[in-house]
Amino acid sequence: MEEYIKHTKIRRAIFIILLMSLAVIVPLVFYIFTVNETLSFKNLDEERYNSRMNDSILYAIIMLGCLLLLIGPFVFVINNMFKRYLDFITTLTANDTKKLLSLNEKENFIYKYMPSYILKENTVTFFTILHQNTINFNDMTSIEVRQIFHKGYKAFVVIKTVNNKYSYTLSGNSFKVRNLITEALTVNPKIINNKNWNY
Image (tube, rainbow, N blue to C red; front, side):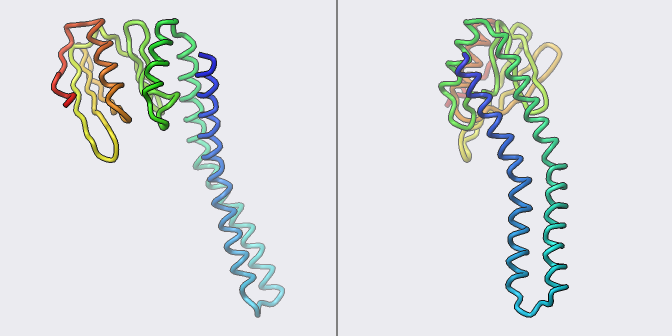
């Protein structure tokens, strides 16, 4: 499990570094472009030359500030999502950890170390960027699945409980859908499922 947590933290760092890099790279490219454009003019006097160079620096700094203001909240949200995820997996039992590692082995690179859901005891917890939602299998009345094969695999999963209805998109492969349904029916065989979904 320590190795899993380590890779999850690495993935978090990569996401944050990529986002922060955008805030630096875009103004830098703009600055280089405008400086090269200024240098291409042969007949600029010193005052005009200095003015254009100063403008390049000023606009690049303004662009950097604006991008940091835009990207900063995303970095905060993503960091908070990973924190919630890491805090949650440390509460798993040995058996639940085994299930998580098994699910992770089937994930493709994009979803590796960050599965869409985690099984814990008799519940399933779905993670999204802004929040997490835990559903008890014993409260479920039905699970409906609709698959789409367009630019990769996607399954739209609708879970109904006595009082609520939840919709989630599971991407990557069908194993995670089969795994979810198998676990749900093992705990609560009364759950209604459209068995013809796996065509």
